[in-house]
Amino acid sequence: MKNNPLPKPTESELDILQILWEFGPSTVRFVNDQLNKLKTTGYTTTLKIMQIMAEKGLVARELSGKTHIYEAVAKEEATQLQLLDRFVEKVFKGSAAKLMLQALGNKKSSPKEIKQIKKLLEDLENNKEL
Amino acid sequence: MKNNPLPKPTESELDILQILWEFGPSTVRFVNDQLNKLKTTGYTTTLKIMQIMAEKGLVARELSGKTHIYEAVAKEEATQLQLLDRFVEKVFKGSAAKLMLQALGNKKSSPKEIKQIKKLLEDLENNKEL
DNA sequence: AAAATATTACGAAAATATTCGTAGATAGAC
DNA sequence: GTCTATCTACGAATATTTTCGTAATATTTT
Image (tube, rainbow over all chains, first blue to last red; front, side, top):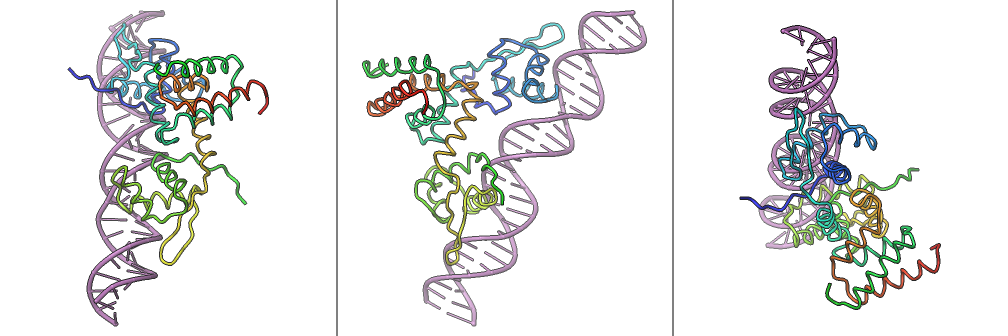
């Protein structure tokens, strides 16, 4: 029994995962309709990518009548974290702090979000271990 | 006179930019040697990518004797920010706060870095505009 | 100057990702 | 049943990125 880590999704695959995360198990038709709110994509293109994702194990599918229902196997937080690690490594040479300083300094965050982050920082300061 | 925004660098291009940012203007030979500390890459491969980067405007080059000296045109902070924007959009659907919560919760940051971030957050709270 | 060494230019091959046409299968409407 | 709409499978075409072989040019060594 294989237990390989899931591969890094490509950009198109990530678009599809976002939809499956948001709406739960879906048909290709539904996913394609959602995708087309952002960019035009042919039905067979979406189908093909979802088939590839199934081969890679990023999604699972189950037959329901004549159509397949696709479900994300890659979990949202785990995938985000995997991509974040890579991104920090590649772009910020491993310095998550530098990333955050740039993100905070240049993006508007709501006061509520800022409070949330401050609280987390205090927790981090008090509790060296998390 | 053109003033187009610089294109998003590919992964290999980013590896090269990191070296030029760190060491300043360099020859292909030097960049390739540095790259080979991370992964094996043939000299002509590095040369080709740097030539493409010059076409795109990501780097500039100047002849010095027989060799070219390449220099980053894309600035480090601006490039990081450009990539960060894209990344937040694609992976976190635009929520920088969510990204930071994940990054803070899962990465170790030094106390000094945490203080730095806290200070920035206070500035953000006091001064709605930055 | 000839030989050895290092560099650039060019283009093609390989690897990866994306797009879509076409054919065949299935389900529902008539 | 037959017709129509929808879906899947398959493979090929396109696009992008990465890799590298080869030839031409220039520099250094002997």
